[in-house]
Amino acid sequence: MQARPNLLDQVRRAIRARHFSPRTEEAYVHWVRRFVRFHGLKHPEELGDDAIAQFLAALASDAGVSASTHNQASSALLFLYREVLGRGVHVPDRALRIRASPRVPVVLTREEVRRVLEELAGVKRLVATLLYGAGLRLLEALCLRVEDLDLERCEIIVRSGKGGKHRITMLPESARPAPRRHIEQVRACHNRDLAAGGWVELPHAFGPKSPEAGRDWPWQWLFPASRQYTETSTGQRRRHHLHETAMQRAVRDAVRRSGIAKRASCHTFRHSFATHLLEDGYDIRTIQELLGHSSVRTTMIYTHVLNRGGRGVRSPADRLFAS
Image (cartoon, rainbow, N blue to C red; front, top):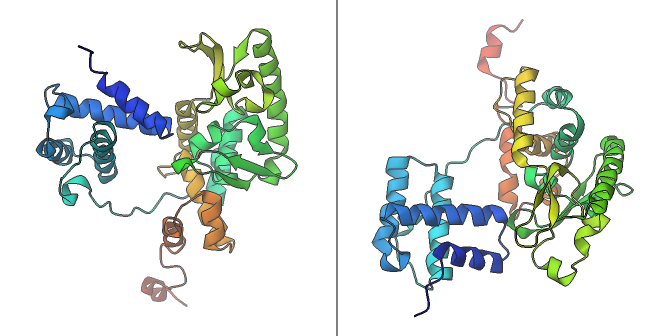
């Protein structure tokens, strides 16, 4: 009798077949594992709709997870049953989805952005400058390849961003000299790696199609990590891109040193980019395209930030002290 394939391996194969992001794979595998452990290591094929509802209810009541985390767990279980096990799920929508209250994002003023950037140096300052100057998400910046930066046209090509979408955004002209110097340093690192037999990870199935592309200059990470690693399946010595936690820690420390009393993070630069473009009079559709939002409704959150505090409306308290 043939052994049943490992459940998590099945989930991974199904996710990769649909070209979901590594982050989605990591999250879905986590929730499937947690679901199985919640039900005493029973295989999901032995569990019905009540088991799904029971697990999601426990997340909401006992674990106290946020609405977005609850909905992510729900999506993972729906994927497991529908796409991996080939079974329908009949659970009430109110148990599957929790409507999240919209949050007004944290935004830095231009002066606050300048103060935070001045607390950063080297590669981390360059990454933060692109987060703010081009409106990139953190992983979009860290996953840039050398070929994605066009210094002459002042453009950045974002490939396989959130939702697998591609887009073009601007490279700030004021920041152009820094990437040029940085690329020279990356080129020297790449040459050393080539001499030592180094490779770079290629997207999806491109590696088998072009086996030598992993040593080509255009495919190298724009922000390579300081250390190499050995890829177990191929035995190749590779260099990954700068890890996001290193950048997150650097920005957190820079915000603290700047003395800004806001819970700012790497993503705050993207929020500030959109808000400052609105302040400069750019239309919402242009900002939507630069950010890569599928719906303009997502971009509209920045109009709320722009109008926060009743701009254009005079507070009655101001009249108490008017001359």
